Image (cartoon, rainbow, N blue to C red; front, side, top):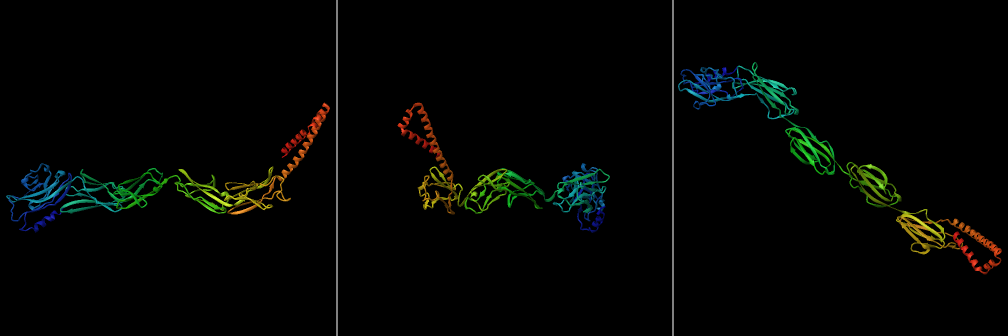
Length: 580
């Protein structure tokens, strides 16, 4: 089992007369609790020293000097040993062969420490060697774990068990390997300095999911109840494999919002919140929270959480939408245009969600309703009817706003059909009504007299009035029955309308003249008939009175003819008024 049998003769061959006191023991040796341990030992002494009454040996624990009374582990002369070693120790080597190998059975944790050998050749030839063997009693096997375990890189874990007990040979098993991907096992036997170690190596490729999981090594001795186990937790280093953030969200302007980010990595990542190229917050942790207070539309955009732990980098983004009512729309300035001009009215606003834009003219819908930041109302060849107040109304579910502009359309004057001359009781009245922008100037022209009548001429009761873009002019020409010329037409009036864009002259038609003449004829005939009727009635009454009263009534009428004429004249005047 051991190379001690080969080593001892070799040491004996190379020693010579100059050999001094010397010992060889393993500096470190280990054994499992309740098992046994064999400490190989070879010593030498000077060739000049002759053993006296045999060769004896003593093993001490802890101290090499007898005067310090160290515990006696083994003594070849007697069985007197420290009570913790009673029945546990025996010498396997032959001291006469300079073999001082010691076996300790049923070792415990209290037996861990340094062991020194003292050679006793009789008389004064006793020597305690300063070299020692340090025993480590283990209650669990050793597992060799690399300082760093990186995900997706092949990993070797080795479990060691000492094999320094000739009566028992250990065996090694790995535990909790069922979840590992394609594990491989290999066994090795190492001997060094007359000590032996059995090892079993587990090889696999770890994944991030294996971080924190348990692996175990079990050492047992067949045909015994001795079982030893050790568990380790895998510390797998891996780059960020997931970055979790809030789902994209919508918030109202002026409210608060919390953005949360969690990064799965080992070791923990440096987590930073980015808004564009600006780093808002960072911290080395498993999760980081970013709080935004009183948010505005400027806070809307893409927020990115970045995790970096030196093994890799990963990020995830979310979109924060800030909802707000429409801002006051921007529209064209108020304008004055010429009739026939084509226009494009622009309305621009900002809102979230996008606002619907509606154009209204004087409160009435014009154009189409659009759902965008920009609405363009096109007016082709504008007419005077396009003059007015235009308002752009922006609306969304959170509110509304509007802006207005005035469009003033300038155009040449237009005569309205209400313009005419009319026969009235006082004479002939001519009215001229025109619309235009700027408001038109009205003049009357009498060709027969070669007279122009305007606001600077007060003849013919000239009157003018302006209401908005409508101008009205009026004159009264003459009393009924007067002539403007010698036997010419009764009415010959021209109306002239003008502004900066044009001038127009129109002959005004005389309306209602035939109706008035008919009324005069009918009135005259009616008046004559009424007078005749009155005369007949008076005569009839007079005759009746004559019959009744004789000549007295007739004398009254004849005596006062002026009174009678006055009554008839008054009746005629009343009749004329009625007819008129």
